[in-house]
Length: 102
Image 1 (cartoon, rainbow, N blue to C red):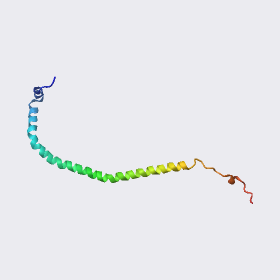
Image 2 (cartoon, rainbow, N blue to C red):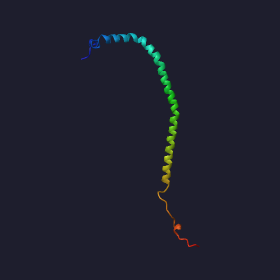
Image 3 (tube, rainbow, N blue to C red):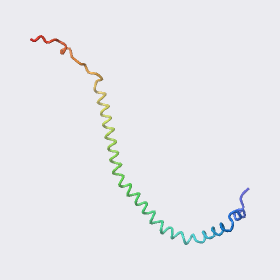
Image 4 (cartoon, rainbow, N blue to C red):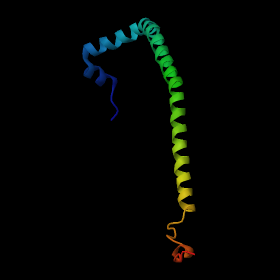
């Protein structure tokens, strides 16, 4: 069953009704005042956010470069490990031939 307006009025009581009427009557007066104070505040928050973003762009770029350098170094080390044989011969045949003093 849908609520009736009379049920709402009974639940809210006289203080609720008075507060609602007061809010409706004062809204045209209070909204410009709140907007006048709130607008500069919001603008300053936006300006601060833009400034923070601008300052952090350089830091983020440096972090990106550092990351790219580390990745490049890791790739170079992996490529070097692939080119280097896993083991090296410890001696050649010429090293094993005894020296006759000749």
